[in-house]
Length: 179
Image (cartoon, rainbow, N blue to C red; front, side, top):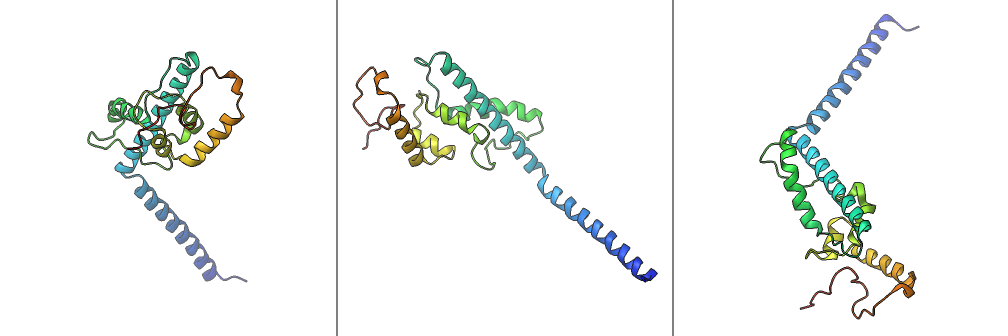
């Protein structure tokens, strides 16, 4: 039979365990919810949503007029997003001097990666190279170009209208001078 003393010790250890677990959870929450970390999560979410909306709008515009539409470079889209989000983030409590840089897990287009891949296939009016853009969204440049080469080889060549002389990998941008 269990004595009263053993029951009292058992209840005391259970209470101590619950209190210890509560203190640990409170400590972890206080570490993760500093004003800087909350502001950074807000910035990451705002930048990611705005860039994904911009990519979706560009894809719709491209579907409407594929022959004439040219997208801007990813660097320009990021700069425009940062400028447009500054006022909104100030109203959400992000300090005025807080840097608007994406510091989240993965790439800034993680939530719309398939749209971003399709968006990168649209010819660009900007000066940023396709390799730089692929690297900035976290895609392997070599693997991406190999997949595109296989896709292009399997496409129907009878739809082509003009003879293009140049490097096969650069359908979206002119060749760079190797010097």
